[in-house]
Length: 552
Image 1 (tube, rainbow, N blue to C red):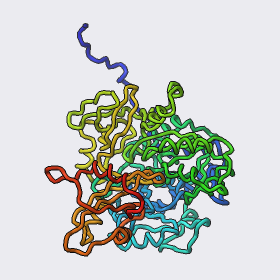
Image 2: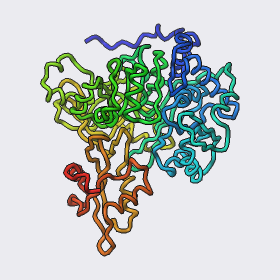
Image 3: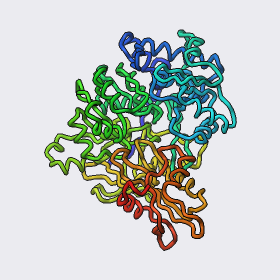
């Protein structure tokens, strides 16, 4: 072997970055191109409203200008509490155009959690849809400070509620459509803040950068085969990982957004037929709505609708029933910390030769990495050694690449722990099959995924422990044909205290938790434990699926 030579330097000399050959990557730039290439094409459809790409670009620029005039500067957090409406799309461009950080909030959360997020993210402005003004008022009463308040009034659902401060439409009129935003200083700058329930019940603020959002938006285009002909119906909440970055993806290809305030079967069938929809994203619960829709709600699809499914795996019978309606299902996997989807169960020609049962096994897999992800692997979390790719050896799923978050806001220890050894540790347990395809085996952190939303079991347990009759409790996932998973609570009662029934505990939880976090099943009795006193949740998961709906 020849001696190792020192690296030659000619390609480093006089070949530096400059304004001509380097511009920081940002998905915001997709909007200007869409307005140039597809100026008059319908970009956004919502009820009777229609906006072209030129109009979306103008309105987003006005939003940026108005926020700047109101004192918002680069690095400030701007929160939004709204459903899938045009203003949500505009916020995805107008806020980061200014250099501010977009925090899209889950309107299904309780007031205390929203107040925590407002304070933790130090929101300087809060855009709130009028439907959620009562919830916002309750959150503001608990928050330490009050940001600039802006009420979004949507003609599709105006309850007359308003917060102090301007309405969104008036705010836009304050903004100059010719506003020149400040140049992005660094593609590593934060673009979005998304909260995840984590494993302790305390929300963690996941910070995205412009580079990662840009790349994952392009990754979606490659994986889902998006083109200018793409028409997307928004069943996936845009607050969820920024709509898995698809808000930005559609601008890059000049597609069309069809907005949807509420996920209802009849409305979705109608919008698909009316607007020639060919793309949707979401959890198994959405497909179940189609499969179980009443005959009078159903309308034929004008063309195949590609459905990108994530969260809990879609049961094979549901996939087959959805295919009969006109869907083509693609299984994705990712986390809030990976900008949404980061792997895809990419279908191979040889899979067509498998029988139905074997195809079902493949469909349950999480697949292979996105083209914009450097690596996804399954490793021993203690040694960081890769497990054998035999489909049986279990390890922790880990990620590395440009679509991994910057880190957790104001949580350096949690960030360091998540990135230990140069990998992002997902906390999910999985295997790698001989063909390189990933398959999840368990949720190591006991997160329950219900309708695409994460529920921290410890948060629910903490509420149950507030009841005077509860001695011990454990909350685990129970398989559900509609929601994918629902919380199931196992409760050991305190002797000598009046024993509550399931209805009482259900009401107790409903007063203290967001609706989707409330256990759907309660099982009373002693909890199985190890010799050291640790509750054996794996046994409870098995038991949860043996108990019927009548328990709650």
